[in-house]
Image (cartoon, rainbow, N blue to C red; front, side):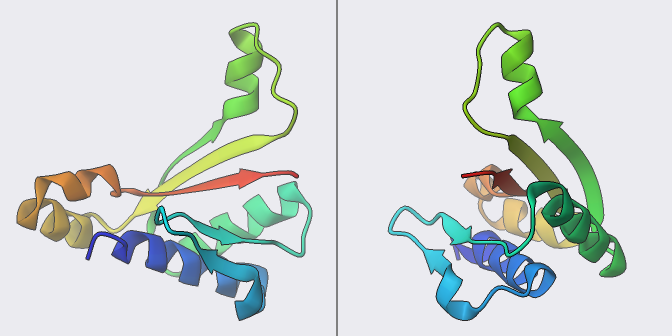
Length: 113
């Protein structure tokens, strides 16, 4: 149950980005990696459109590279964090186990290699 939010995020990623199953990897640390066939801006736009189309609540888009730059730190790549979720469903997980709040809302990190 600890990795359910990550599996849900991976399913959303794979369907939004048309990624073949072979490009979706669940690592030993529970991080799901999906390689997009699209540029970063299009990947973000596709994810946000798919989230909206599914009626999932979108919470935030955080440009981590811009935040780093504002702090005087240069990242060597783009890094955008997207947060979204289904409050009634997420609340059930958090009610059952408080630590589930670490995975809810769902977060996706879109980076450029």
